[in-house]
Image (cartoon, rainbow, N blue to C red):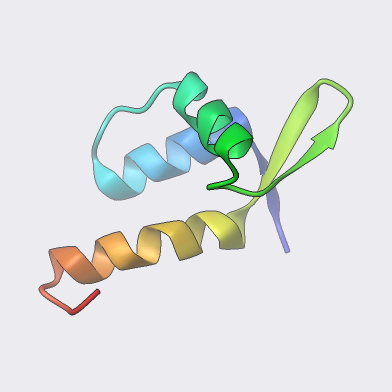
Length: 67
């Protein structure tokens, strides 16, 4: 399992969706429980598999699949 910093998570989501995203959006998702993160000191680490799971419904929607 690979963990990403908030900035790396944002970059991955932007690359996959093509939409700009702020770091604060990622922090807000963590705070709201929409994205699971591990806190390591002042740093949050997000599981790459959690991001992939979050993006999977978006990928299916773009391809015309049922969500």
